[in-house]
Amino acid sequence: MKQLALGLLLATTVQQCQQDIGAELGLSSPAIANNPYAASPVQDHCQIVDPEATLSREQLNRLIHLAGGNSTDAMRDLAGLPYCFVGNVEYFPLEIDRETWIGIRYNTAGMYEGYSFSTRNN
Image 1 (cartoon, rainbow, N blue to C red):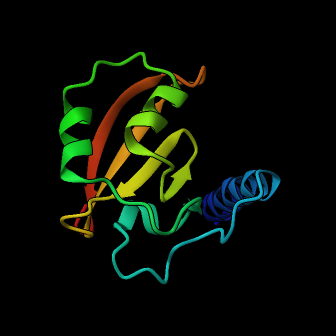
Image 2: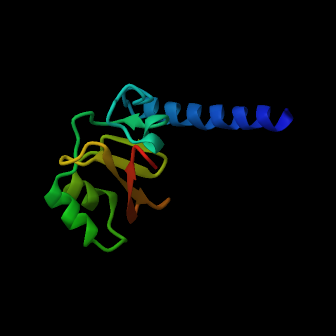
Image 3: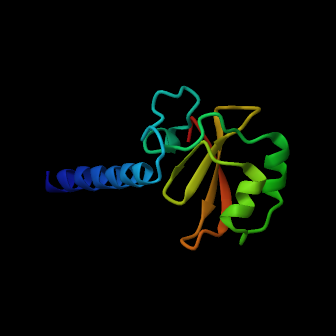
């Protein structure tokens, strides 16, 4: 029972921290749970930045061939502002398949580390 209570407290604390960061940055809604296209890992905790953002096929192609180490500014030149973020990962739904999301990961120094795919099934 204590472990469950501690787990709930930690989850609440992490979510509250993310909401506080979003509010501090002037971002909107703390979650996108009502978005039917949101991938499950993204749905619960994502801080919305640009609800119209998507990643085009061309942008995805450039991203796939990009080496790590680029700055956040360089990545924004490539992809634009993200739909939302959780921690150090920015999420974009694909323009061609909105049930597939791309997560662009940054390290603590704000340098691009890589990307991952996320779908409603994973």
